[in-house]
Length: 130
Image (cartoon, rainbow, N blue to C red; front, side, top):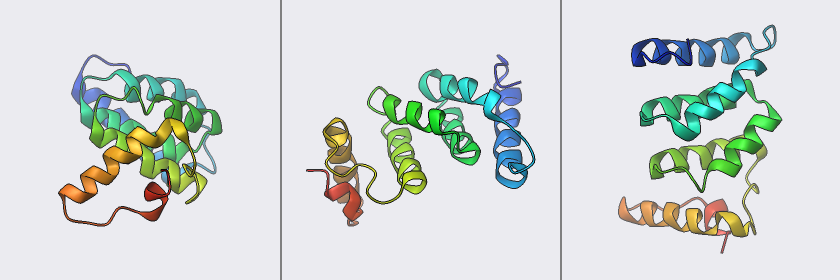
């Protein structure tokens, strides 16, 4: 269902993965869905599906999947998905996730610019990347 050409079917499948991983992950092994979720996160035409894939990857909590998500941030065409992925990774790994991380500097700068645009203070973890 995650690979369905029907957006409705794919969206329903993403919701189910998030639900079952969040509430029944201790009894279900959903790691087989990680490669498909990563494919959606990296390539899906619908930004909402890419955001749901991030939520699914976090709910499953597969280490290899989280690392692949991190590696794909710079290539992510959507700033919104980049920001959510950054926050998701900080939630998963802790507040020091991107400190002194040169590969995240430009993305962190974009996040800071976004916070400036909306009149809020960026999280200190993001500001520490310079």
